Image (cartoon, rainbow, N blue to C red; front, side, top):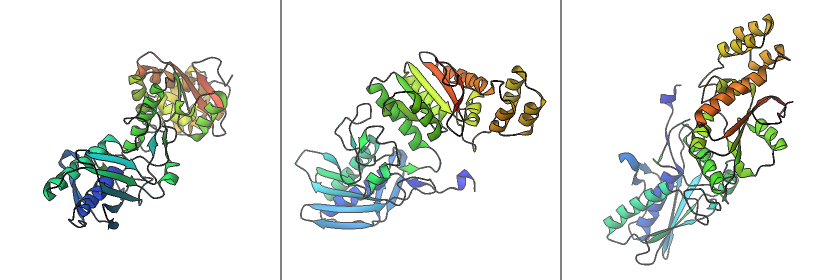
Length: 362
């Protein structure tokens, strides 16, 4: 199956919009539209089947089950609920966080501390669609909209929300309303928010790692607050480009030898589906280090970077990879940030480094 064959899905913001519109219509005597149709940005339209529809004096609740398509989204299959109650005249829409939806507690996010973590994009979608419904029903669009995701607090533990200062649950996200499978848009969004939060907190030393083992290696050696850590994973380009706009004084990058070998070759997406290790670069580095025939043959034959490192033991290949990766990072950041790079093996040991002093591998 190719990427174009994968099924698209809907964001939590689109689901919340559909639920809110259905509840608003029911609140004002129009019954629960099922399916409920909504307008999305960029001229798109969508309809959603209701999974819950309840009402009482002065309130109505509608729910939609999120379908993320073929994207591995943590909220896929979750019930997104909207409770709509009448608001005071001329109050417009007031948004509240219900069960499973977080609250913003730190500056730097697109919403001020104390606000429910319903992002500006979904708020605009809900506002526009309720305005459409209000006009059609001949009523005012004044309402209190409470968004809930039962079980959302447990799901949020699998996200970076706590690190970003979003506590108590998930964020309601989505600018277009559509989830593109494996687009990594949510991940990139999280990275950008992490950078903004760190900047708002005045943190001058940030760290980014390709995985849990590499991040643990940083944490054992550096006393940094949680908000200083960026969940880079394979998205080196997203991290470096976000930091170019908000440059810290110091950046520590850590990762496995294969991932950092890709960064050393100038690659910004380090995932195996996107790019393979540049064998010519490995051979070049080995020749510069005076390697013998065994590591050179292994590199040319496509052996793993770990295997080549083992054959080139004592030559400083991990350091050479770190230096090249650091050069890539410095070029993208375009000045203003001191960068250090640590190469971390599977056991969590730092086996190579560049920049910074003292080098933890020495």
